[in-house]
Length: 231
Image (cartoon, rainbow, N blue to C red; front, side):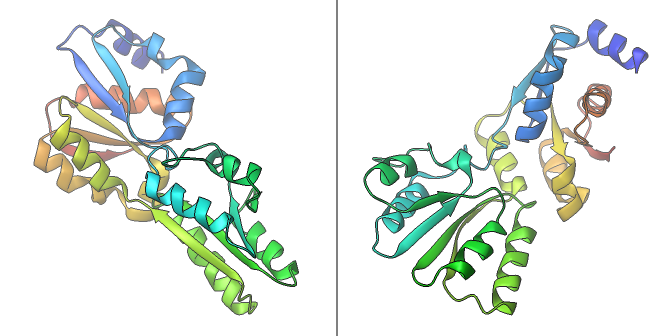
């Protein structure tokens, strides 16, 4: 790791713009001060890896509408409460009399819905590939328990089309730090068509500071070459 850190700090090649597309990577890079460990020629750019941050306005508007319907309660994670739609957020809707409850796990919605004697519950199911299996399990358990008053309003995204849009419309990215947990679901081959299409490297990375540094090192060493490396 000492050699890797020295290489990244002293890199003197062509300027590179490397993008991480996962919010957990972004947080860990900030927490560990990784940007300060790199040569000025290596610039890290944060991509749209947070599902809440890329949630469309129309989805928030629909949740707000549902929360204001008589007998309907919207269940959501806390980070979605303050995201504004076209006019208001779920917090605003709650202040206006809407029924909004925060949950810490999708499975909390099963307990809440099963304990209610009346009413309908709508869970705000946002996320990328990693959360889709959890929501599928939630629906399966709701069916097995014969819970009929729980619904999911989904806003699920997949990572490759997002990266494709960035490359097509923004460009100038020399390599991508791909999220390891997404690759557990999709396999690292999901990034291969994009790597070939744009001729840039992808490195699938874990989430510790050391893993991110090792992945950035691999990206720099593979600059200008297509391919996907799963670390």
